[in-house]
Amino acid sequence: MKIINVVGARPNFMKVAPVHLAMCARGLDAKLIHTGQHYDDNMSRVFFEQLGMPRPDENLGVGSCSHAVQTARVMEAFEQVVLSHKPDLVMVAGDINSTVACALVAQKLHIKVAHLEAGLRSRDMRMAEEVNRILTDQISDLLLTPSADADDNLLREGIAADKIHRVGNAMIDSLLGHLDAARATGAVAAQGLVKGGYILTTIHRAENVDDPQTCERVLRILATASEDLPVLFPMHPRTQARIKAFGLQPVVDAARDLRVVDPIGYLDFLALQADAKVVLTDSGGIQEETTALGVPCLTLRDNTERPITVTQGTNTIVGTDRKRILAELATILKGGRTRGSVPELWDGHTAERVVDVVVAALGTTQDLDPFVVRA
Ligand code: UD1
Image (cartoon, rainbow, N blue to C red; front, side, top):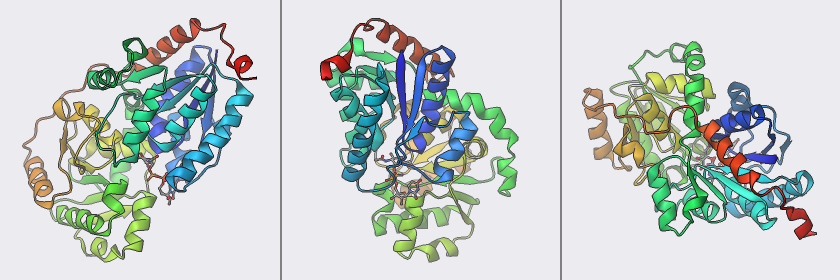
């Protein structure tokens, strides 16, 4: 059985790594293709090293460009990959542009598509990721979901129940498998911080950083938060570029203790999350990681595609309203928030369940040869 696993950007790596490794361990012929959507060492290479992933079999090197150009470049290059490797299945993950691009290429070549982290919905079509999620799910054959809400979303959109497989959260496989190594990095002390004595933040969504007013408002909130505790801000390149372009560096400089650093590798960042008093973020994955770690999280967005992190976990959706965020933060700093619980199947064994589903699905279609059809 030949499989192509696709990765493209930072949030893909910790989801695909355990699944790719489990497929190889099970004797499947799995190739790893990197679209190159993220390309900086600290956005990409360091994750391969720390997650024990092999070097990608190919890197398509698409880089940063507009949504249309990026999607088109991935599609053009990935079509050649599929034609030369002739896989039985392509697995895509998450909600980035590379996800939908590769799913579309594979499905048009009549190759089975598996979507890891299927069914999440923010119901906000202004987010590129929501468009990518909906389209990818509609053209996937195996919908590998992390939670029951995701199953419900798919059923409501008319997807057949027999395509939906609740496997759990592969990112939590990586988290549980690397937590000891993360703690051993000493990353918290290396940043001059102590357990429970700092706020960790990451902000990079287009909705929060591409508009000068919103970007400034968010920075001023972080500056105010740093009056209480040091705020460590590993900054995504998009955010770095916007702060420079909007002339907002003085806001950062004037803050009492807002520490901007370059993006941080997987293990160090995990250690920093685990020991933070609270995490302020607009990331999707960090909402889940903080829930698994039992660390309070404030999500600076108006919605989440991961509602289970709110209903069950440690996450609170706070938008970008200054008063609301500072009030929630004050509650947490006073110790007034319960820890929440870890959702079912976020247990470190998702990758094994994915391989079971894939093997069962491919076992029934051995005689299909799409390349005969195509020729
Ligand atoms: C992408 C994903 C988003 C994910 C995020 C994680 C889409 C639509 N969005 O957004 O869901 O949360 O990755 O990081 O796919 N850049 C670099 N080096 C890199 C990568 C990017 O400098 O290695 C800079 C470029 O200036 C680029 C900007 O970051 O223009 C944005 O990168 P891009 O991949 O387009 O989108 P992200 O904002 O990273």
